[in-house]
Image (tube, rainbow, N blue to C red; front, side, top):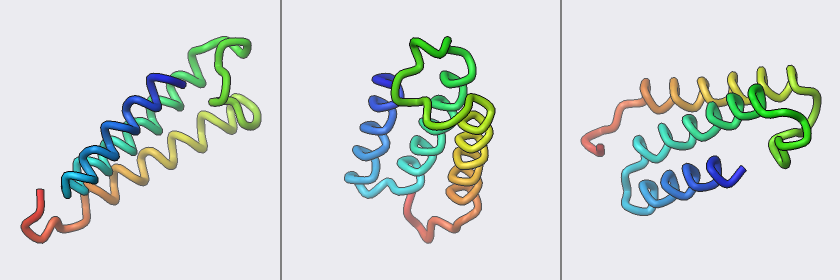
Length: 81
């Protein structure tokens, strides 16, 4: 959970520096990282990444992470990096 939180903090820093696209990519990446950790870690070590069943958690976080990254990729930056 701490690793996912660190990536989220990096995303917030990018957003604070007005780098919304990079920040959004980091948010999506953190969500995909959470999905991977939920899939790989044993149930007693997963902590707050466990919300429902393992399959539900992994599928939901993967779909959400991919959707965030696709949205960040497809929206025009209008001159903002």
